[in-house]
Length: 395
Image (tube, rainbow, N blue to C red; front, side):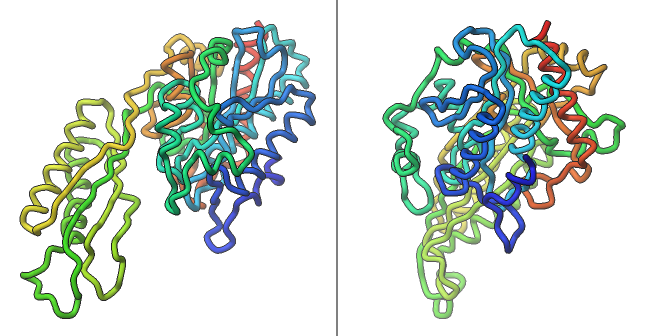
């Protein structure tokens, strides 16, 4: 499975992956998922939001145990983030069959669409739509960097954008969702444990900072006469690092757009996107407010107007304690640890019991071609997931 999936969407120059929602690479990943489902005799379906499902047992019976993750990527992302969870889910099902386990509850594997939000700027679109956290109108309004709407991209890919929206009937049939994911950090790296259990996901969000200045000639405009938004932006990036460090939080400007984007032109507009996360919502709100204040104050000195728009926000996620504790027990006391990364399991936690397993990442690097996990640890993750599915569905 891994060898078949590995080349899809890989950029030869960077070695990373560009599997963006509703593109050719995404279609190839979806074809791979369907082939894996059908080769195992599973019931395959795509829901109204474009999420893919592979069922063992009656999909309508209720109280199902579901596992899976996503197959899309961030720009030049690694091979493991998302795909490890989907590949491990099929492998865990194979392991259950090899053991002769007989599920008493339906089992399903899911591939949630557009989890990373790399194309349209909003993470977890497939699960947000399903859970009712994103309306059809707001989804239709999403556009990529070329101005293509999500609705148009879905339609070109052969899906009906008018059908998207909440899917409470489907969610009502799910008794538990367990997502396996490569660890995005080094909490397990220096321990003897190849697999951990998630306790919570930090609250996190994305804010767009628009710095409006005045375009002018780089070679003829005196420094004192400039209204240069790049200066305000640069100062805000440094302020974000300082404010986050003081609060024990995280703040990152990882995406920027400049107009007119000329080497010999002072910019008229710099647009930067802030990703910020913290252990609690109060700290997160305070950090973002301090970053905005620093931007406005510097903008006042630079003659630059600053406007801030919150594009997305996910509150703190406490995974179902009973399910979390049961997973740790099933895995012989596996360590329980929090994460700052968002996941489909976090989106769904408000409507169904969810839990997560993390597979050890020796470097801690993620969202990069350097992201990795050893084969032994990946196999341990499959075994752990099979143990969990057997414990939940075969009792």
